[in-house]
Amino acid sequence: MKLTRIRLGCILTYLIIPVPVWAQWTVEIHEAYESGEQIKAAVTRNDDGYKLEVYRDENGVIRSRFSTEKTLTRIDSQYCPTFDVVNRGMQNVSINGENCLVESSWTEFILGYINNNQVISNPLYNFMNGREIVYRFKKFPYGYAETSFSLNRSKQALLEALGFNLSVQTDKGYSN
Image (cartoon, rainbow, N blue to C red; front, side, top):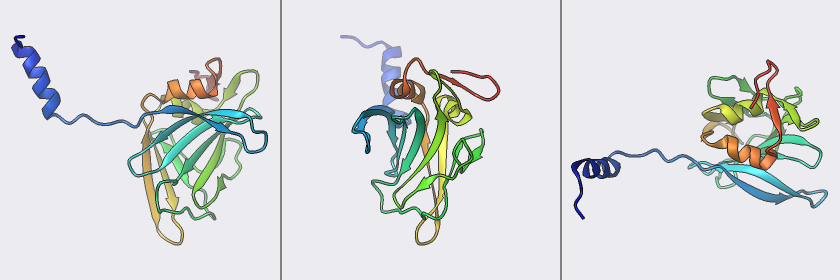
């Protein structure tokens, strides 16, 4: 089989130029603590060992959970971390203005409340349409840390986990 110059050039380019590796979003099934009900979660992990999950609980509340599961890093549970979908605004509270839930290895934010297969949530819309999300947090017993996740291809996993028929809108009327 004879390779043309174009094919050979493409192959060499592929081998020489580094291609960025994007974290993959997957859908995992978890069991709810109280009800034992099966819950789908859109999940991604980064190279630093951190994990990000977005799921719909048994009450129709959409939650995001950031965890340090595969690291030695511990979160100072006296302070809510901040999350920032790059260029869309930093937050450190849930959509309803309440503080996050925080433990030494995870923190959780409420992103929205589902009503008739609709949710008004700027943060969830940003998770679906942003490029990157950055978490910054105070470490226990001292210091600060920062890590990020790609949001590339997050929309498909989020819709699969939360429901393909879910309409996500912003407070300004933008929708998925």
